[in-house]
Length: 342
Image (cartoon, rainbow, N blue to C red; front, side):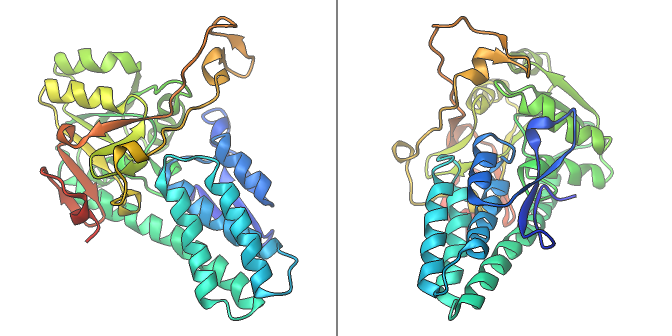
């Protein structure tokens, strides 16, 4: 079951609506660019690799919808759609790269309008297939770091729902389990949207991998008590200096370092941004209401009038990371990100 794919019968981007989990597994279809942008902004689709593929399919969709009868006109429509998609979420680099990859393929190979539309769609489909294969390689490379009997802490969701299939951090755990190792996962609830308790726990339950949900603030104590053996997380962007991931990741890295617990990052090389430094990366701020209210009933959680700072991501410095796991292998400190993409 893929998180996101192209629906040929309906010429639409089909995806799991992750805002409904764990209560309901429902697929939705985006038939225009406004619906794609809304799905990204509302987190119906999320996770760096999945966003990259969503960006690719979104631009391909704009080509199919274009009413222009010239190559130049279709490319113009695709660029406009790409700009709108890129603005939805700024921190994860995969989204922009998915957009740019399809645009480049269309511009280089689109000798006529038929080719522009078909090349765009095929490139997006290829990207989805590649993501699934890459995550399997990440899982295989990382599984050797996990021992039989480990209790592994993870944060947010870096599973199949953050990708097209298999997952990054959870892909490593799935691969270790497939190798016959008995693993228990502690999933942080991951405030404010509880993507750990809602999504990670749901994924692992479906796979019958033992999982227990903990509050974010429990991690340090459980490390001190010797309950946690490993920490493994995903990434939304990797720069020269830091790994950007869901807010709270940095805290776990500090705690893991204090208690001599390995802290691993599992991510595809598509998240590597070798050109950027920390001051150049915008950290996304989410809407206040995600913290101010609880649940669909909108029960008040923070008094009206009290300011809220709702950061989506934080930065974990390279010196806090034990290894980065990619499809190209496992990389240990000193980590030079240029080596990750060779």
